[in-house]
Image (cartoon, rainbow, N blue to C red; front, top):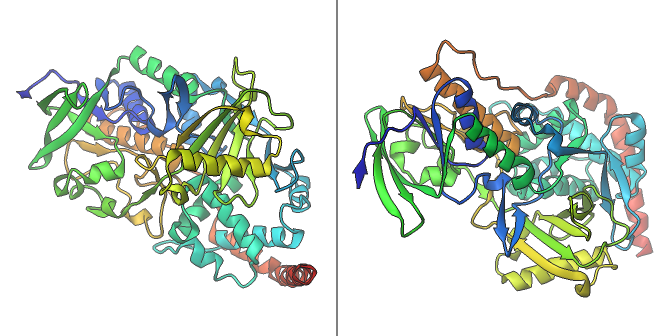
Length: 499
């Protein structure tokens, strides 16, 4: 069926955080906009869905202080108060439950000393961990990149425990092993954190209730037409314009229609979906065709509902040190309204290792891993589990040399714009901040085309550290690093002899 509709001036396809941000900011410049989403709810990877009668987040969501654009968006929407500040980051060593090693953001010298003395890794190795981060900040990756693995294993001073610490820090948040991770991207996120080391914030409950739901209400209150259950099947291009959208409404058995495009379109869909539209679209991106070289990886989630409140657990982020599947977790049952028992929301950084297992087998492996760290936890305590490996909804993870392939918001088509966490951004920006930033960039691209006289859409930069400053600090500390490396080597030799 072919039809011409009275569609608004702009159609945003994709109701994840990138598409919602684009729609919000396009409407704020006075342009009529509609937002189309294939699923039954908005939010995408930043949202939640109903599974077995429970609202389940896509995973654990944290908001570091350097997420400037995200916090600006939440303030505009009026939901900043739906986040809570977290003071500590806890680390649990095997065999030590319920004793946790507490780590704070490095606001003071005392915080640094406390972390060094925490015993998570021997003090010399932990010092080398920090020297490694300084060394990484000293690298100038302009126009080049390398894998995080190559960087770590080329450093003369890094011990195995220090390398493991750095790799776990990355894997737990990105799902990418060090061989597949961009050193330039990791440098960018470390630089951003060092410039904005404020407290991490977390939602007070599931994102659907506390973030995405209120955001949708504000979109509709501002006049954005929101339609869910509308899937984009294909696009048509003629000359320098996108001319038609093939849409299906109502699921697989729903009605399919070809809709003529008379205005502008923002495609806020995953990069793999974008590639599926073929050269007619990918060839118009800037840079052309590079999006086909981007990769995503699954970042798993396991939610464990208990019948009781498990004693001894803090209510903030916990890292299981040495966890084979890079598990980090939060007992959100302590902070959610109406939740009287423990609810463990776990991130599974190495979920790909479970790809060949059934859901039952994978849950058994992960729960037994949790039990190894928390002996108080038993199978009898568990009322329900929800396992989401996200193999079909992977998380964009910048790989080596990927930044030059990330597309800009504007394309060679006069009426097509792109948004998504994979879009062009400063190194280190991906995930939630990447999605929001790309939505802002797409809205700015639309503004230049339709409202050139309006004020530009504000896009905050992120803090960074110049390589020259870090290089000077690295050189100044090099003699001390050599001494610490010698001490670390002797300590490991003594440990081997004792074994």
